[in-house]
Length: 291
Image (cartoon, rainbow, N blue to C red):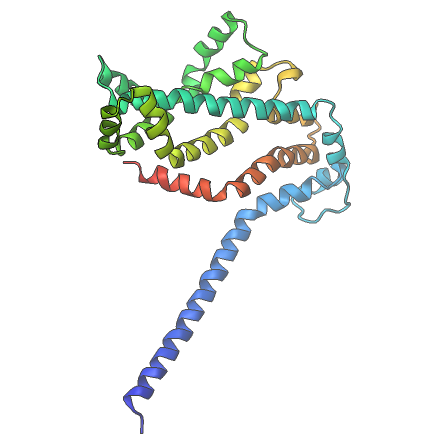
């Protein structure tokens, strides 16, 4: 005779088995999608270790036959490789720090201060979110040409240190900080700048860290402005330098060199991602939470 307890236990076992099957199917499904997503990356790595004649015969192979390291040797033998890598580090780091300073000060003014034309200026910042860099490319190029700043690292840093997105993001975050903290500091005789440095900035470390990471990544991968402004190999960034080294000549397309250059360019970013993985994920959460 079946008791209620036996029926309940049987039902729980069936539900547990069903949940395990669903979990397995879910993992298999995710694995398939991950493999599809990784297929271009795997192909890129494999292609960088294939000879050029083999690539010309069959480009879509995922098997590195015949295996060769000549593409990597060609890329790594470039005399300016480490110079370009240093340029990228200098430009990306300086650009990021400058943007944090300039945009955080502007955001604090919009969030806490009352001044003439505050609303129209903030509206102008919001309009800047909808204007792509390509729309302002020509006047920026002409301005730097008049100042004779092309072919300098300064020209690669300055155009992006004032970011509408950064100002908007930080303004929204600063508005969420309780005003009572600032009022208490003012009663103790603290000025605006001291309040900003000792109260606002420490409380804003999460959002500033997220902004710094995304700014650094975006600047590292920047292509359009550097390739126009920097025409001398001495000021190339790693992205532009390796593209110049591995570019095609005539009717020959050096796929292996291009893939090796792409992987070498991405390696610092991959390492950067694994080091700051939690910060990047939290930054995405912060960006998603801004209303």
